[in-house]
Length: 286
Length: 286
Image 1 (cartoon, rainbow over the protein chains, first blue to last red):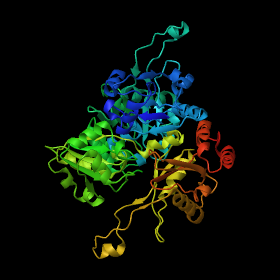
Image 2: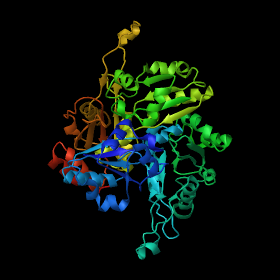
Image 3: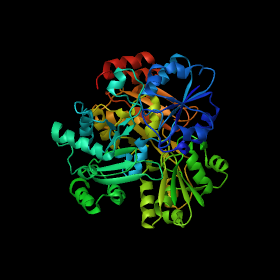
Image 4: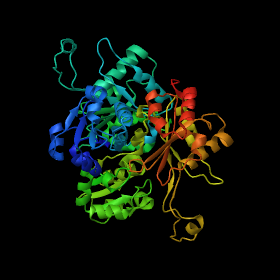
């Protein structure tokens, strides 16, 4: 059996009791560590499980999935995924390959930022499609997120923006020379995300889908003891410091409920201006 | 401290290790049992936790929340919620009340059907807003879900439809007479949902947002060992029998990826007709 086991969001104790039982008994345990990361490292997981865990990078999962699946028609293999196992497309590929090999598959769901974001007080029914924001380069500033946000905004919905992480990335030079030297990991911050959003609006698209005065919420380390939330305008969030990774951002839609305002104002950079913008542009405009 | 502890979807072992530690040590433990239910009963939870659990019905949570919060500035109170704690608005109210009483609050996230639905192979990025479907009465057929689905369909997105549950409901007669007699619990099936959707389209709205030939996926008991999925047209799903509760349904949008088709065809009522409809109306029409 191939078990896809969700690990949740923060640390080793966010695994479910069911998931832990599977991990302790499986013949082999792999950790998918490139689409998302926990706030603790592989060592903390190994200590908690009392057994070794093999880190599976993107290349292994996408090109060498048969190694992961080897023998799984006879023994149990646990494939650990941060968050919920079906957050990333890659794992659909792994399941399809298991099916071809007649290996049964079972999924152990867990928390995902897609619903944990409800801890902001924003109602999950009011969210549209989720988008991703990648690190811009000087000559590569993918803006497809903008059109998706535009669709959500047009029907008054909130947008969760997932922020880029770069782990085990090679520089072009090291890649060209075939050197297995990796760059230090990088995690996008709420401030960087807000800046990139405004850069695309101001310099590229100019369709007024959002502005420096649009309301947003930045969140960091959701699900952990030191989770942090900051509500304010995109302009304010360009200067927000939420500390250590991981960060996410929600751009608010105008289909709101006053309960959402009441919940969020606790996290406002500046409560007075937050409520002023809300009352002017958001409250009851749904 | 007030702890909102997510229980996940299926049984007592879907709680996280962190959540279980909190439940075992809290001074009092409440179970919210009206917005969603696990597939096991209160007794199974109490046996697993080794302690009593007080069931909190809607009235208690909404009108007598101070009873739940009593003393929580000094002792720990655990409030257990099926799925992820912030799936239902009601819990925002409870947190706001705790804030007024200067009671610190912490949330322990868990799996929700909103992301567990990814086990269908449908990509979570392609979902729009989630809607709810309630049991129709002869003279009460709320159709607000239709306009939300219309918005999702207009931008090619999938829609997750959450199905009504009725637990601890009174008949009008028993309510009028003040008798604490409750009706047996009722859980909407995928077939009932598909029928109600078509009833609103055919008899009320007639805007062609979806038809009997639109593709959908029915799921039952997601996250449990006997979870079941059935893919087909809405017409086919009107006759699908997915067995015991809980059920959910996804209406497909046209912004699809062939990987989604490949994943879903395994669950097709009829693989040939599923692929025919997909190729005619869905594939690459995003």
